[in-house]
Length: 422
Image (cartoon, rainbow, N blue to C red; front, side, top):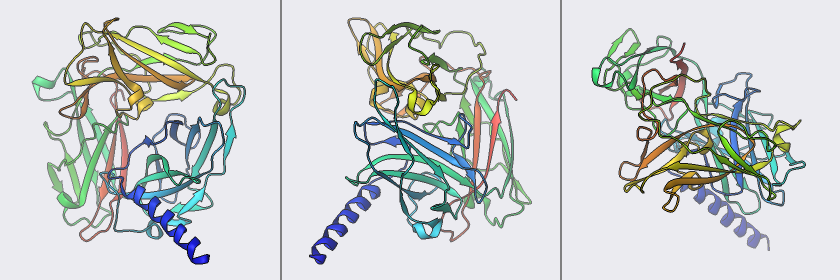
């Protein structure tokens, strides 16, 4: 009997391990349709990046909702990743974790007085059960304890702050891109590190507005002296400027807010109909303060936003004379993890001559862009609908990784943020 039970445990363990091994690149992704509104924040900062210091006092807070009727039991574990978010296979969890490799999620609450019932889960990292021993890229893996299936993966980073990074932005020196793009100049001081070959040992990754879909990678320094690396290429350090983000306010079902044409409260879950989305690619630039594509959960009448904010259906419509061939339009932002999530795809309605989308969102304030996903290039292009302007306020996060010769993992040795309006 013991042998039989042991065999079952081994099969389950192998099955779970195989599911994780199937992931070639870790990203922010919900594998279960019932998992919604998964988000990291730093301490109590609602708008923040998923980055903490190694052995520091800060905590990342992961929260998400499970729309299943029954409360489920979840476990969490971690995967150390390379700088390109492929799984690191050189180290085991014992090498990069202090504590237990897998733990149960014990902090959860049922929704209160909502039409859509859900369970809200919260996880703080690091905690009394687990701490991080290495800097670098990490993915937290959430599994259903009963089925053993992965339901959610979320990315975060641990920084050991060895390198000093400074940077600025400027209008491109390339005249052809001067009106549409933004250029960065970056300097990295590695004097406190034993860097022998910066061209191979140092990797730089740049994010625009916390977007995962257009990371700038593979850049090389233009000048190296005394372990100071300068990056100022007119070709490599360029980003399309895009435009300020579109906004919708879903914080109340009692009255229409800006850009909401109609609220239908006849059914159990309210329906918000967003004003027709205009094409902005040919409109002149106009500054409007935004959160660079982020969102905040909030219900105006609620005391505890985590469990009292309800879910609502949101309908988008973008007038378009005919369906385009070769790609699709998507609602893009942290709202969709900058990914091709099916519910944020805009399908063409020939009767209404418009692209339309419908998604279930937790009440709050949301920002987004409308991107065109090119089937051939497999990437988003914001140009057709939004346009590009060099004046646009954008945030750039510079991540510096260090892997010495014969090193076994990519250390995250420095992070800095560049704002184009500062």
